[in-house]
Length: 212
Image (cartoon, rainbow, N blue to C red; front, side, top):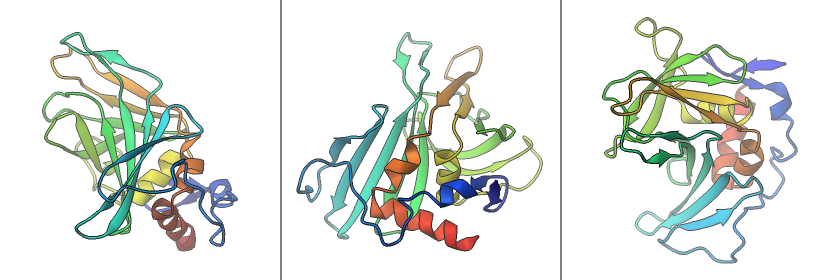
């Protein structure tokens, strides 16, 4: 059973009963260390070897953040001969109380289309903003047709939830100077169990459950 969570994406009802989404449970972080650096980033192993977890604490505003990164099952060779391994990054901020989603693709063609296919849903066009490296795309919404219709599901938490429970996820983009597009494939089956280990992420997923 699928439960609509606004716009074009869905959050399966079965995912909402995941035992880790129990408000009374204590998240078990995958960080094996007993302390957290005040400004440095820690990289921790996760149960899924394709997932890495980065944690940190902002000294200026005194808030913690968590970034869960999932490496794609596929890679490609760029026009310069470099093998590129795309990844998706879900960042949870203890200050802003929100989730943001970014895709590392490597350099892409300027203003090129990016499409995403979440689980069994039809491919959707993705609105994105490029970071300065032109290889990291910040998610901003989806729509069904290239130039028609309003962008929907701009909320990062909604999008992250859909990714985490709808494996596989496919991302199609056009690498810089390439004659064709490539598709990055992600097995996201391990994302939800990892996200709910971290209170910064889990609290936002709980808010989605309460909306339905």
